[in-house]
Amino acid sequence: MDSTANQLRDLLKSGIHRIGELEIQTDVCSKRLIICHFADIQVSREPTFGGLLVHEGPEGAREISTYSEDGTYRFTKGQVNLKRGWVMLLQNAEDLRLALDQFYPACVGLFLAQQGGTLEIEMLRDKLNRQTGMYRFARSISDAGAQKLVQEVCGPAHQCAKKILWKLDAQTPLDDSEASRFNGIPGDLPEAEAIPLLCREACNHFVSECRKAAKAEFEAKPEP
Amino acid sequence: MSIAPKPTSALLIVGHGSTENPDSSTPYFEHADEIRRRGLFAEVHCCFWKEEPSMREAMYLIDSKEVYVVPDFISEGYFTQDVIPRELQLTGPTTEVRGKTYHYCLPVGVHRSMTELILKRAKEVAPGVDPAETTLIITGHGTGLNPNSTKAIRDQADFIAASGAGYAAVLDAYMEEQPFIAEWDKLSQTPNVVVVPFFISDGLHSYQDIPVMLGIESEVGAAASQREIFRHNPHSLREKMLYYSSAIGTERLLADVILDQVSDFDKVHK
Image (tube, rainbow over all chains, first blue to last red; front, side, top):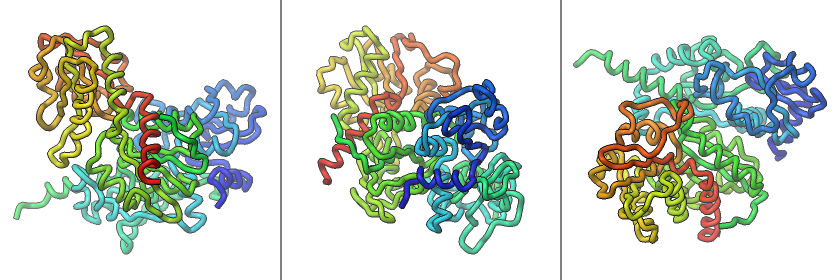
């Protein structure tokens, strides 16, 4: 099989230029590959990148993506609060792949696996049943409680731009909602132009919220 | 120890991670960056239990057919013996999973070269302090759930005591089991005490919980990276001079220990 970097290069040639909040551009200011926040596209095309903070190479990706503009820890990378005001210059598709794996961990590989029919999706109950320590209690959340949480925690209205692929279990799909319908592409872009952010398993933030909700359900039960 | 380049293999560094503390995964990424710079592997990746990418997403990161998995954990215990093998579907030292060959190495914390890193860290944090008048305490979490969780620390205390480093005493102490690190002054008979936290990251335990137990802080503070001023040694407390270092896992040379574990794996299993 071709390397992830080579497949990424082919995706760019096919017209894809966006992943999450990142815009991927070629041949700007004589640089081969650049990425920036999609809201900074216009300024990035000005001479000397319009004064955006320039990062040479993929090394700065983790630092940029760890905190939002107001200093909040971005505990899940699907959050739609990526910092603006920077541009990253990359030499080749391998460096681009390295950078993207820091901004959106494994999301290129997940998309390629989905395209190739090899993506394995993990149901919420399987994920909760494997939790350890204090998170073990999360598994006792009711189906109704989990469905409610999806609508309260997931989706762009709650700062997450991932497309949810999982169900509660193989027989129980998520209730229809803005969160369950979201396609993983922020910014109203045609699907042929973006790599969607895929959520193949509930994130640890969601697991943490399940634990809290399960405890609340337990405490709300009338004593026998 | 030098390691022969493995230009067709991947290195997968496994850590715990956290959705609460931004510093928790920093050392893992720094170790990966350091090893990547050396160009020894075709690719170097990290994955986590409580952070992205998850262990089950790791296979979507890796192109290579051969993968060395190194737990960036300080002890052999529940995570390295149960959680990581289960999540990566490993059944032994070498496992074939979906067309890839995974080699499962020992965790960094049990490698003998950790002894040198602890001594280096202890000297750095207390420069010019006479070891003969100093107690060195290696501290960890400790849990009644798994006796192995303290073994790596007890072993290191024994190695250093026997190493001729000259410390008046070398002790192990824990957050949640005896001997308790909160009683560091009672455990020590010397005027100087150096405490080295045997954790991978300056996360919740080493930077926020233990300082309260030591008496450096009165209450749990902000995460390490969100502090304006790093703590200054020494601390004059409980009629002793206390020197507290950052977590051993933040030592840049830990990247070498990861490579040592890969090299040791090849010696034992290939």
